[in-house]
Amino acid sequence: MTQTVTPILRIFDVPKAREFYLDFLGFAWDWEHRFSENAPLYAQVSRGGAVLHLSEHHGDASPGAAVRIQVADAAALQQELLAKNHRFARPGLEKAPWGEQSVTVTDPFHNRLVFFTPDEGGS
Image (cartoon, rainbow, N blue to C red; front, side):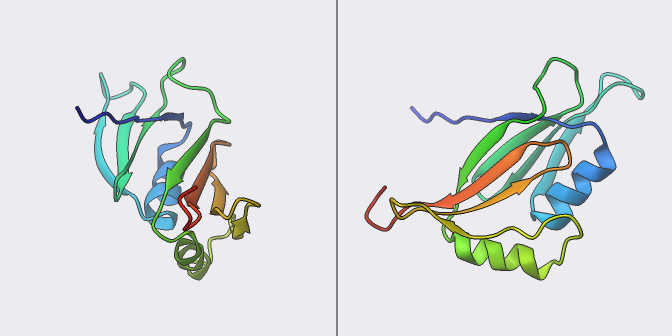
């Protein structure tokens, strides 16, 4: 049986969410739903195997969440993001004592995304 986890992150401004997740992080905007034209947005974004849901709905999630997303090469992702010269994010590359490398970015709604590559030893 295949099991997946899909985090829901709270957003408050759709244009800012699109700029951050699509233009900066390189996610695709897979789909969106509103119950009516003036209703809050619920959407899915993805990049590779990472899938996130973004919601304007009160009660779906709280701002300030933290999500860890495993990537093949955190150093390459960091260089990709730095090359975009985003006004509000210049992520660094961190190396944990156990060997994991990670790049942490915070979205405009205070949600923290940690993209990590495990230590080659299998951490």
